[in-house]
Image (cartoon, rainbow over all chains, first blue to last red; front, side, top):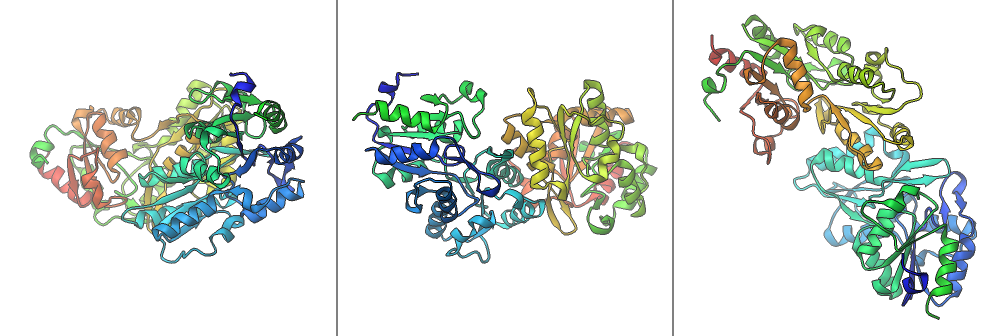
Amino acid sequence: MAPWGELFAGVRGVLLDISGVLYDSGAGGGTAIAGSVEAVARLKRSQLKIRFCTNESQKSRAELVGQLRRLGFDISEGEVTAPAPAACQILKERGLRPHLLIHDGVRSEFDQIDTSNPNCVVIADAGESFSYQNMNSAFQVLMELESPVLISLGKGRYYKETSGLMLDVGPYMKALEYACGIQAEVVGKPSPEFFKSALQAIGVEAHQAVMIGDDIVGDVGGAQRCGMRALQVRTGKFRPSDEHHPEVKADGYVDNLAEAVDLLLQHVDK
Amino acid sequence: MAPWGELFAGVRGVLLDISGVLYDSGAGGGTAIAGSVEAVARLKRSQLKIRFCTNESQKSRAELVGQLRRLGFDISEGEVTAPAPAACQILKERGLRPHLLIHDGVRSEFDQIDTSNPNCVVIADAGESFSYQNMNSAFQVLMELESPVLISLGKGRYYKETSGLMLDVGPYMKALEYACGIQAEVVGKPSPEFFKSALQAIGVEAHQAVMIGDDIVGDVGGAQRCGMRALQVRTGKFRPSDEHHPEVKADGYVDNLAEAVDLLLQHVDK
């Protein structure tokens, strides 16, 4: 690992994952990760540009931000890059009418989208709504299409709730890919377009940015492939084996967001 | 396609898939496919050896055979090669205690198996039991194991019920593989061991046998890789695009089992 000063040379902006970095989601709105509320506040008082870059697709941005504010975070909807709005943009541009296999909590993001006579499927982290019946309905829609289009909001393997590890959208995306013999289009991390749109929103180039996340593949690997530096926090879905991942090596590992921000603010060019 | 006489030269035995060949499963026990009851009876009156080789894993063999007999088929439990008994054999040999993600209908096949303190997961076509909660429990068991073992009864993509196409175990196996970063061990078609055990049961060599199935990959491709000839019927899950499959070409395509048996009995060496 490079010395921290060298690692952070020229950094102007920070992308922050939310779940597992700011808080652990779960019953009753989840729990802030120790030190994260103050860490976000310190970042915001610094000269660094900051953008929240999440694959959250169980909740609308409004609901997510409301929940985080109740936990004490200084965050607003306009600071969040999330997959559902990005997907809506794509659906409109391409004239796609989705069959939605999504969580009720995120449905409001699709209010302006025509879902009649579907010509594609959008899959997101649907949680309990990943019933056999709902999966089968999505499968049947895809099999009726001449050129099946499957759009997946992220492709995470799992995330951590206060109650334990939970399956994310990725396994269900893979299930439909295999069932239909197709490849999904992923909207969200680790798609390069998604990271780039987050960077554009704060006017920072990839080589000037650090991603901080708990997902060694989706956050760290994805950001690095876009030319960013990336730190993995040892919170959220982090597992010790991540530090010996066969394909991805973070630029740095830190115990939590608080440590990451400490190091950043100590070493980033004043 | 070779002329039928040439194709069937030296054939001594026939492996028959069940679902989609003999009958379409569905509400009320399903429906026999036209001509199949008589076709099985004719095969049994011939000099050919016959074995039923199924990936059925929602029902015990006893229940499956009972259902088929009610539809008029001449079939007994001892004539059926099925994944659940084959899996039990493997579990016993390797001292594995499974967490079972299976349909209630097949649970009796595992009556003699120790399922306490599980050190592997067995997944089968669980149908409605593929709830998010059940998938997540299996996932959590696997993630707790140092060397996760996932045994899948078949890896079919989908099958046809009278109500339409239905997701099979394969997509859910892929979901757990992706979630845990592992590879499942498949017990059932297209595993070569499974076809071989069906052939052994009738004392027929692969080069003397014809497989008849509706699944271009699981039945036809799997049997061909074992050195068998294989016919695809245009019933069950057959789709016209199967005849132009990029990787698998059946030795012959027939409208249904009745046509296959007509051709076999006309052309097989007397």
